[in-house]
Length: 144
Figure 1 (cartoon, rainbow, N blue to C red):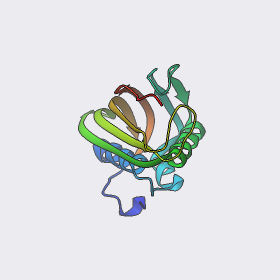
Figure 2: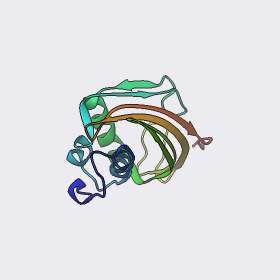
Figure 3: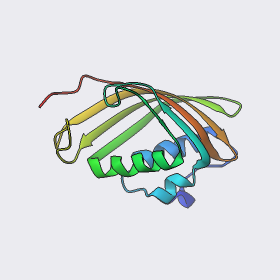
């Protein structure tokens, strides 16, 4: 997914947020596509959940590393953005995520489907995400 052809405007918070989720969701997108939507000072906070029990805090480098790791692990991924509410430079997002594991790795097995409901808050400045706080609520994960 080349962002130059993506339907987003840097002055519109909702379009930047939707482009961001589109790039993350698209397994054929690349790191440059994502980097264009992220500020160098990016701060991401993932609250504890079934996949990341201790939660996580990431900067730009950590976010890009996670992006690469997700692409290596998953064979399918869909993020369906259900709702975006914008006030100023802040957006509240309600989304659904589905991923299918592509290979056996750690507690996951090839073909395993993971599903989560997501609530996130993002801050967009100058056409880039500067902050992303996410609450990922996973459906029960099947055991091996």
